[in-house]
Image 1 (tube, rainbow, N blue to C red):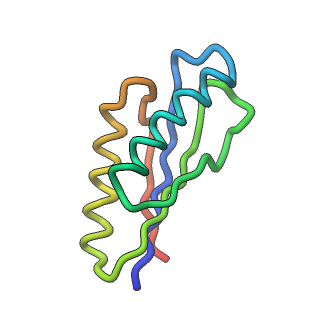
Image 2: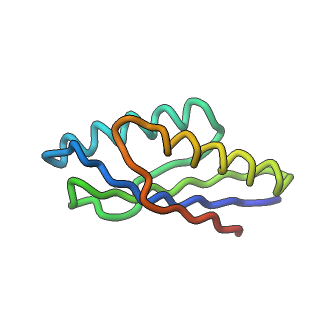
Length: 93
């Protein structure tokens, strides 16, 4: 069993309030969860309206498969409309 954890640091430039931030993050989280078999949650900076961290976990039998899927998620977030990718990190558990 392989567990891959992806940490995404995001900027939400158009957010003028926490409500705007939540709306943008919900859109990204819903789209990623629908397309991929992952668990996803906001993990840091909950009280800042222009910054967010998302934690994503994926479990599978093949490490190459997990790495490929997590890389695809990073690519999708890079082109997302409402958020900008600042940094990301992939960890193995």
